[in-house]
Length: 227
Image (cartoon, rainbow, N blue to C red; front, side, top):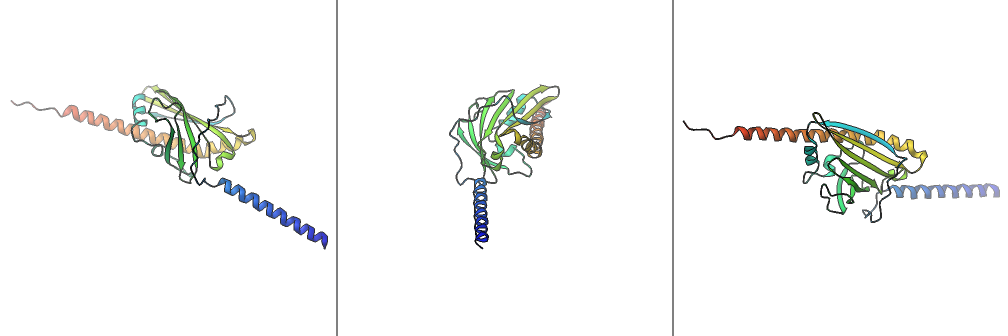
């Protein structure tokens, strides 16, 4: 009986410890009650070790027109990004810099998602040919597998318009997590990237077409001559 009682007490203790561990883990995965301020230095970009996804799209507009559309006043991140089966971007908050296009290197902002989670984003390169940025400080479960991410847009002038190339790279926390991170890139990031690039192409080409129509109407609307 004493042996049975000892075993029972041990089983109860193990169950309580397991429950406490699970409760702590679940709480850790919940959205924060207050938005993080991200005051510290960003992670350093590594030379190797990333898992990546790459996609591109041809836009029938010049690189100048593409940049003008992307950097149009009032165009927000949540308007551009197209997530599918994943929490959407709902807002951004500038933390460092004024986010003026062409001079955003070092600027930092907090990205808000619809599930209450956040991440930090900092611009690394901001030129007419390249826009590179880093994301880190995930409050979502992705932080368990991903240390940080580096993404880059490249704008290539080609016959017929501009080829926009977008590469997203995540650094796994350990080499063992690389398959998990690659699967996330393939299943979540790839649909987002292709949908976002398609939406960018549609928006840019529609604006370009409307601009051509307005220009054509303006050239036709000339005063007539009296005989």
